[in-house]
Image (cartoon, rainbow, N blue to C red; front, side, top):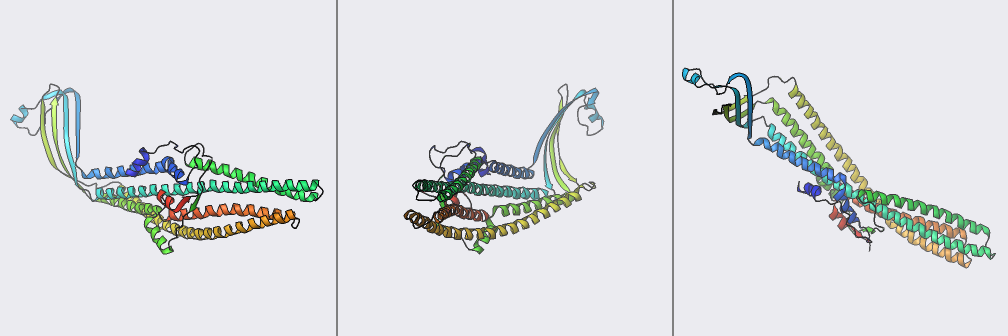
Length: 441
């Protein structure tokens, strides 16, 4: 409850990013947790569920009530209580057209078939479910912000690679143009370079468009009108992936979606238990102070105390219907929990596969970029010395651009895979991000 209140009351929508400084992943994540409507909605649900627990617990306390009324009659009315019809009592009966009544009543339910306890346990389980939902919402938001942040960084890296290719091809075009003018190269060589340059420019435009879309998406996710010009790139720290059995155990114990589903099952079962309690009689203790008076100002007071046993003999099927309905809801909650377990285990297998695949691809593509860069450099030297061909150099230059773009993609995929795995095992948080991902200087 404290965490929910802090999120609701202390979250500030002010954008505190210092102008001119690169935006970090941690700053973006903190901002999103402060202002995102999904988190604020989940926090409000936690506060409401906590209040429901207090409401259910109030049934264990005596109920103190008071009432008052003033009634005007056409004819004089008895305004004092009648407890007998002997001569002395009849002589004390007062009549008046105005009857004033008031009472202070104290009541307490001695036995209700366990309904109160079941409702309290149901409310507590629901509060725990809402708290788990808040945790899951926060983790999902962190994963989403991380993915959006990495998409912006990746799009920027791809754009930089495309722009580098455009500059290299523009320089080659100028060189070939000079050779054609001097009669040392055929026109077809210039046509090849111009075609490659046009393709590179088209790829650059596509990368720039992707970057604009990614920046707009991240800005919306963290609730700002526009992002700073620069974002600080990030990379994984050297953190080993736990063994599969350890991850499965963490999934079962700490996955917030599974915890939410499990607590929902408990809440549904206790709600059914409260419905079953309606088949038991209810025993109440009653007491009160009652006052009667007339418009003339004469008042009589008396006290009453006793117990009351109540049991509905016929309810038109309401009790059996409530038991059947709540039992069905409990079954629904149980099956949804089992389904959530299956989905979580499938997601864990996919996440582990994605982590292994992304790590292997990142290592491989880094090697590819290194080798292709050397190939492009050698082809350019060969071309300039007259030993190479324009076709081979253009092909090598295009391969380098594609490899660099692919490297940016697989690096982001590796981080996203680790974030998704941490989300499944219930580890994803701001602290986890700070430890598992570091800013690139």
